[in-house]
Image 1 (tube, rainbow, N blue to C red):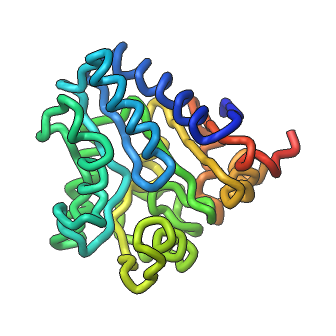
Image 2: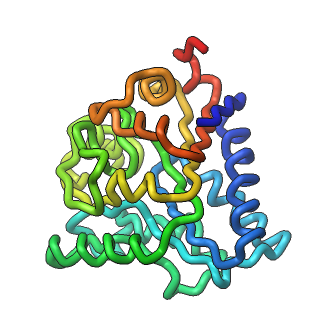
Length: 243
């Protein structure tokens, strides 16, 4: 793993932008694995700003999102499909048919099978990740098998509480309790992985990810075994690192 420590969230986002644009400009038909949550929002703003200013094209880019709440339709303001349109796609020239987010509706077996097959057919050139405070990546909660593919999962209470604070005005009862998520094996299949983490509440997970043992109890720790993983954190998230 390559570890990059930046002063703050803005610098983390700027550094991530350079890596994303290097992929996009050098491979105009690249497959991007994308993430939701609060961490990538500034990166997505910077990607929009670059597109509008420098006309970086996304016309032939394909995107594959990590996860989606189960039980929410695409047009629900809390769905991750809606999140991606609001924070990124609405200002890019990307072809709508090239945007892929797991469905939050329908038969669970059909949804997971379809997305798993889609990912097998379209290897990601880069997979963007955030980091849960409990070490989850995507919605792969602690205890998820490293060999997992796209699956249906019950969210841990800590994840529900974190998401309630960030996106549901503190209302835990409004947060969906289950999700469809790309599996850990599929994350590891990406040619490059880019994980971003900011803030003191991520410091324990960052330490485990970088300096701890590789264990399914901290899913992100598997990235120690990826052939090209870049971890960008701010000083607060890096505060517990000893190296």
